[in-house]
Length: 468
Image (cartoon, rainbow, N blue to C red):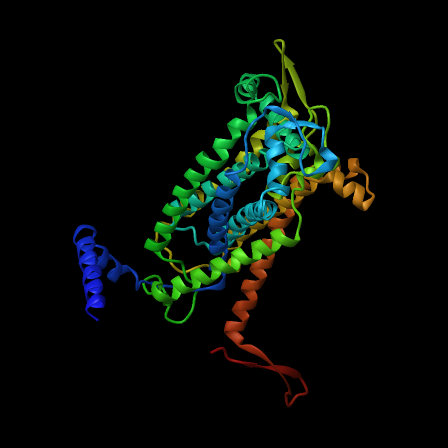
């Protein structure tokens, strides 16, 4: 008993010492019981967070065994079909991770699946925020942080799947190098500086490695922390309901409810990703073989989040301008420039909407998408443009699987890029206005009860019940 009391006394003294210098107790007392609204859609953001943490954990494990070297070696390992083949040390170490390191293939696949889920979760989460107006004052800065995370996530994915130096990833690097060369005036210099000379060179893997494992994750980790701090400070926005307005919050305390849920959700996401990594093969680099500049994989496709950028280039006409002894490859440069501009439109939207509407109020209650028809229509138009360009990015796969003409698909996408977003905007806005009218009628006349009554003069009507 005395020993236990002594230990408790020591712990209390340490806690008092820390509280006297850091104010931990008073801070925890005021913040840990903070009330947060709750809704199932908030899980979308948590999926992004937990996927990012899993990426870091699995990435650290893979870093211990991966060798980012462009030095050529002759393979003589466990995967016999490639024995005697010349390859880079990066590709050889990837094969070693897949076949010789205990749990290496499982960790590789969890890492790749987590990357896809991370970007998909960010996109869906941002669309939820967009359509409900959760980006409005005072949360515009948090929207900007999320947008930067999405952009950096796409770039990190590009650098990540380029590291194994297999034939598929090498084709992606070649695609990127062609886009860089199309930049007027400085494209050639940028390519030489990046690749250390002529493509493919021997430096690109060793240069991409610190960018992928250190620079970009470090920036993203800082943005994630800043994003979470602002979420904690502003609290979640809440859906309309009884007792909820711009000044009152209905929800559960951060401790212990949210902390308990967070732990359970993390292991749930980890379990799902582990299950996917265990049963669903992704990026089987051994089937592609090492990268060679004179070969390309049949049906090579980028990860889905880069599909619309490739779609832009695939459907763009091959326009060239020869002026003053220089060739401007507009057929590549214009799509290459449109890719960040389309993403930029998402990043600046909150500030543009606030400027156009003149709305300077704080908003803590979410909108129903139907009640903001213009914003909802713009979001659906953007998603339709993304879908059309995704079809363009996979035009060869669609042509072979559906037995269609690739030329017909290309022309369909070229026309649909201009027509489909406009149609989507008009149709969505009309649907939203129609839903508003239905809501208005329901408020004025009540809910349909299903009961039919005959009036004295013979007319049949349906009885409406008033809303609660």
